[in-house]
Structure formats: structure tokens, C-alpha cells
Image (tube, rainbow, N blue to C red; front, top):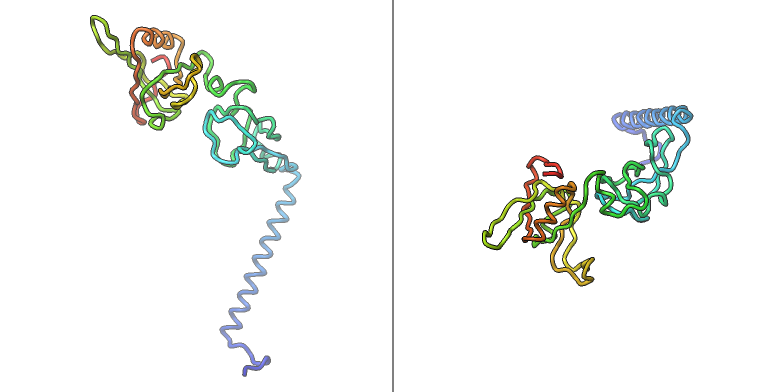
Length: 226
């Protein structure tokens, strides 16, 4: 049996001494860091509440309580326009995406009473709804599409009515039609257009059938007046 008074081997003693030195050094570094942070506290300002995204949120999201959380940050680190009360953001629409933990600021939100579509329409542009046979899962907000009109009569033909239009949102099949009140089987795309393009689309839809083609992700962005 090994007695308590037996001396450790020399390598074990060296290892123990090094471990003790490393531990004391780490303790000293941590204490020094804490002291520096405490010294900077007056310069960084008192902690303030900042509303942040609880998860990744897409553009056009209507914010709810479970989509938000509050974190405390030093006053000097709070972004300009950051919200401190989740109630100020609930029910409002994001005009740009947020990643989880990113602060919610006034510039990221639409006007308090703006709807989920109106919130995304810049001044001077309009949202135009086009029914299409494209499956809802095939198109996402932010995609670009061309709108084609096919006309019958004595000279049947198809022509491009507008190009490079941004998809604001996709309304899936089975939703209620706003005019008839009956369920709609056709998916509908909400497109961002200029007023004159809206007129062209309405005219083409009155005399022909509208369809869309989807532009590739790598194609250049075309304005809403295309």
C-alpha cells in the first residue's frame, strides 16, 4: 500500500507546478479583463433593452410576439432607431429581412397601419395580381418573371407584355377570391409594377390570357417599368 507520505516522482511534481502556474495566470487574466470591463462601463453606458428577431424573418413578415425577444446591450452599442418594447413592433410588417438576433429598428418596419402588400410597395409603384398555373412552391418572393399575353380572334398570337417584374408574394390555390367570395384554384402572383405597366397588364388581361415565365436567378435586375 502506498503511504500518504510518499513523495511524488519529479515529472509529476513539475506537471503539478506548471498546472498551478497556468491556473493562476488564467485567473489573473480573467480578473484583469473583468476590471477593464468595469472601468469601461461608464463609457459604454448603462444596459438598455433592444428588441431583436427571435429567428430568421423574411421580408414581408407581419411581426408577432413569438417572433421577437428583448436583449440588454450597453447604451453605446444600441443601434440608432432600435426598439426597446416588442409592442412597438407587433403587427407591423418587415420591409427587409432580419437574421436571428438582429435588432429591429424603425427603418426595417413599414408604417403602423400598412398591410403586408402595401408595406412592400415603394412610392410610385403598384402591386398587381396575376393568376397563373405555376405551382405556388415553384415561385418565391423576390423572383423575377415575364408576363405574356395570348390573344385569339382572327390573328391569334402571343406577345410579351412586361419583363423582369419582381414577385412580392405568392397567393396559393384554395384561397378565397376577393371578388366572387369563392375559393380560387389558380395560384396568384403579386407583382411589383409601375402604373403604366399595370395598365398594360390590365388591358392584356381583358382581351387575352396572361401567363408568366420565370427568369433565372443570375439574370440582371430589370426595373418595374420593363
